[in-house]
Amino acid sequence: MNARIPPSVLNAAQTLDQVSVLWDDQIVPCLQDYIRVPAKSPMFDADWEAHGYIDTVVRSTAAWIEAQNVAGLKLEIVRLPGRTPVLFFEVAATRAESTQTVLVYGHLDKQPEFSGWRSDLGPWTPHLEDGRLYGRGGADDGYAAYAAIAAIQALKTQNAPHPRIVGLIETCEESGSYDLLPYIDLLKPRLGDVGLVVCLDSGAGNYDQLWITSSLRGMASGVLKVEVLTEGVHSGDASGLVPSSFRILRQVLDRLEDSATGRLLPASFHCEVPADRMQQAQATAGILGDELYKRFPWAHYDCGGATAFTLPTTTDPLQALLNRTWKPTLSVTGAEGFPDLNNAGNVLRPYSAFKLSLRLPPLVEADVAVQQLKALLEDNAPYQARVTFEGAAGATGWNAPSTAPWLESALQAASQAHFGAPCGYIGQGGTIPLMGMLARGFPAAQMMVCGVLGPKSNAHGPNEFLHVPYAKKLTAAVAHVISQCP
Image (cartoon, rainbow, N blue to C red; front, side, top):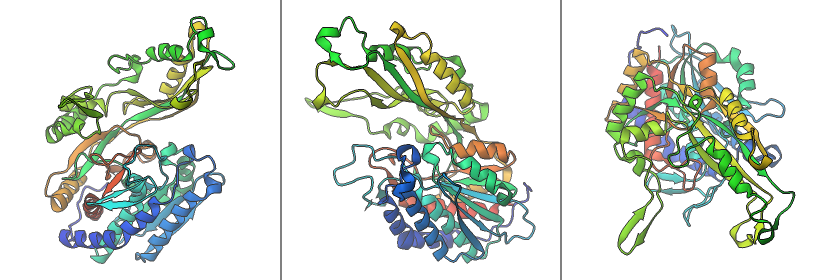
């Protein structure tokens, strides 16, 4: 990109006032309607097309965008046969010398319900309380399309010159964005020469400043299944002779993970932390301190006046940050073959299956990791049991390119203007498959990866919420950065 920074013509106070009014009067009510729709991602709703929930949220979002009458905006719902739809919009440049495009990204599909919601809350029941909008998907990532349009409208209201802007809002992100690449191929001629990507699907270290995501972990996932019988048998009759499928499953997982420490054993699943990321992590650890681990809903109880609680793997802020952003970690996110407790008789079960989610460091190639994972788990099964790792999928992580001087200046100015604090940089433990796709397709593009998923917002889990005051300031900050884009 041209290094020359355009003069700022946006009035920060006016921008924040305008987007705040739009959020209060229109966006929050729209997001409440959005939360009510169980628009689960295709991985969690195989009949998504017949149910029509994804189509409902896409059409509702499109209708709202069209109702804003943004000058020069063209909007289209793009559909490929058998694939989830995407929203695509474009706004022509008003800065004559600008030749590059700003791409704004978000998604509208959702994670499933999960359990454990507060008694007065629910995944499909919006509830606004103390500036927090509870419900599934509002923060991850239904707000993104609305915030993008609000930021563009602020530019238009103040007649701030801007480059060409396009928006890409998908509906398959929570399933790994497997539908997205065909749309990128289809739309690439219309995307133009992308010089800046504004991704609104990430998180924040706190709600006190603008946070930019500097890296994302990748993921390898699949279902590990151990079969020992064709049907269940009486445990008193068979145990001691028939090996437990769960014990075999534990043995197989011991090849992958040190169960005492959680360390992943294969060296190929690890990578060195780049020097610039280590410096940023040290600075961020200094800002956030013990909030890096206190933010989570640890299980605790009162035992005779003394509180017992689960300890984190580390209480060192820097190590805590690196553990969740640059270390591989294994999670079991689902199980099959286990009856619920009320129906668990004295039966030796025929099989055990775990759904595995392996988070990979940003620089580890997911496709290679998936192949290695399958071989490691399946080979030489104990007791010659049938061990399979199926439904395997992977998404490579992402490490941000070096920040151009103009973008660094714009981010710091936006954070100071709207938060009164410097911009912070933080790696995230999750995966946004689009970022890797865009990095390959537009290697020279700058990246503003940000979002509203701050402390306790709990995306994917119970009591997910959108921090509305932070979202307002983030929207204004996005407008400022776009106004500064050469």
